[in-house]
Image (cartoon, rainbow, N blue to C red):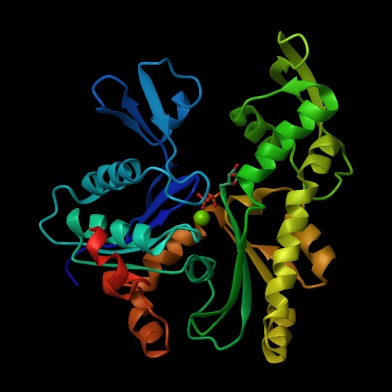
Amino acid sequence: MLGMNIGIDLGTTSTIVYVEGKGIVISEPSAIAYDTETGGIMAVGKKAYDMYEKCPDSVYVVRPLENGVVSDFTATQHILKWYLNKICGFSIFKPNIIVCTPSGITGLEKRVILDLVTASGAGKACLIDEPLAASIGAGFDVHDPTGIMIVDIGGGTTDVAVISMGNVIASTSVRGAGNMFDESIRNYLKRERNIIVGKKTAEDIKTKIGCAVIRQDEVTMLAHGKDYVSNLPTFFEVSSVEIFLAMRDGLIQITDAITKVLEQTSPDLINDLYQKGICITGGGGNILGIAEFIEGQTGIKTFVAEDCLNCVAKGTGLAIKDMEFLANNGYVFKTREQIKGYNELDDLS
Ligand SMILES: Nc1ncnc2c1ncn2[C@@H]1O[C@H](COP(=O)(O)OP(=O)(O)O)[C@@H](O)[C@H]1O
Ligand SMILES: [Mg+2]
């Protein structure tokens, strides 16, 4: 195969691109900044995200996948095109591209993403299910007939799936994930402390002192916000116990989703899961005590995959090697024609 093999994890929070032989070449927030007047692209990725919620009226920043759906299609197109030009702008060979999209997007959105990837110069383009990509990136062998459970805690959604021989046997998706934790922290501070904080500050608090179990060594941090009553700036201290309490409902949503998937799983596979355990991937794998929390709630051994944030991108790229095996074992890599609803959507294009 002469063209590059590329895996793209089009995540709600980050866009991560894996190139076979090179590894992760791009890992940036899924954000784009436009000039309000001309509509021209000012920045993509981190530079655009840095302007988010802070920019003057002359700039507007879009995070098109923030809630797990494509809220702004043109912006998504621009982001993908920008990165693909960066990676294979000068190559004469067409790359093979596998894309992993957020689990909540519609058939139409998936199809347009594939069209766009093809239009940007892909030789072959197809979609892979996120949990399967995550499992490959976490180091599981698709040839192995033993069932495993993947819990991918991303920004917009947490996806729970049982996988065996490269096929998703049972799965579900819930909103209890990174963005919801941020929102819960904002709500908690407003309700309990009369303090308003921005989305970025909430995320910063979560990543610094967030936890899924009560920490033995309670930690605190200082942050800036606004007093809800006086509307004046305030500099306040917040503790890990408070953040634990704020995050609890979201964490329970995750274990409820795991229980739901366990209910759909056959007894033999359940037996496998008890042997192999639950594997956590996605940015949420970095929450202190997350494995301990899930293990405590489910009674199943739980661990966080190595380099959890990059598992999906890595697995998406690596899946190219196993495409034949997966296809022969019933896995459908969705090409444009195989996306559900293709015929009905034809007249929309
Ligand atoms: N150390 C951390 N503690 C808690 N949450 C984290 C940490 N690092 C990253 N995250 C969260 O992980 C989420 C992003 O995970 P990711 O798997 O990249 O999402 P997506 O696949 O939806 O783009 C964000 O909500 C981010 O705040
Ligand atoms: Mg993801």
